[in-house]
Image 1: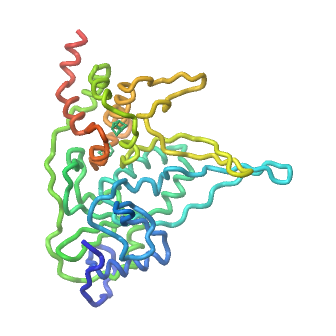
Image 2: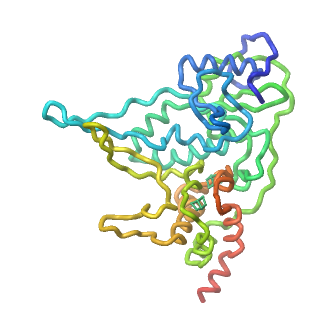
Image 3: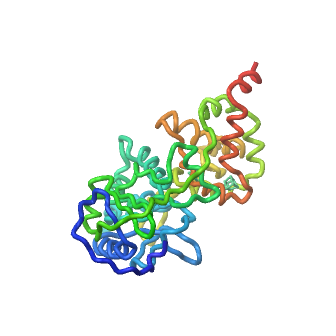
Length: 352
Ligand code: SF4
Ligand code: SF4
């Protein structure tokens, strides 16, 4: 799906944004127009690895492959300044951070778009996080349906689909050698006004097929097995690298720190990980989850029990990145199936 493929076609006047066709050349033209008015964040290769990053040329966008990290950092940055304090003319001055730019996240997979939706539910719940809300308001998502699945993908087991357009503003689907382009929201319709849409014949939409495994009854099984020795056994091999939470499409936990920069103090919000010792340390040095088993259980209980209780769905989109990244092969798909196997009855029986 390289954007360098060239096959000249005539631009048509059709720009309804109601479901139309973009050639690969047309896609490049659209990206060029978006770049004139937006910061465009898209998959591009850096040091041989595919990352979402700002692009300045359409030809740098790579729409095949899967990025090593989800694009969540462009709405919930790894580190960001919440405010600055400095002494000026004998007085203390408080400075707000720069306003976020208008940006388009381009080529976002349905699992990653759902991950951002999951973070929205937390950060935009009243009282909403003002900085996050302003960045989200200025962000549009151009989605890309998955035409292939990777071995670690399991989105369909968690109720998603490789062409799920629920969480994006525009959806692109590869069909033969063109893209079907559909505006999903008003924001998306405005973006598609800039696209050289055509009435061209399209092939069959290419949508990945994935096998599903059952996940019904997961939350009750998680609850029933809360005190199981299973968590300590799984955690035994964890080396606290935290990479599972940093690559995750859904994990959003953060810490707040102050840093001296010259004569200024910056209050920073930085990603944090529930797998790290110190994550729950409170005043006086008490560590709420001192053992690896408690921290491992927390990661999965948050994803498969607490978040579903609060918001009705798991805090996992089946992107599989933690499966690939974990250096000791702790695999959330196996955890889900183990917990389901342990079930509710066996835990009740053990307690009796
Ligand atoms: S598969 Fe792993 S990395 Fe992906 S959303 Fe689920 S927990 Fe996060
Ligand atoms: S990636 Fe694996 S080893 Fe690293 S913190 Fe997560 S579970 Fe532990």
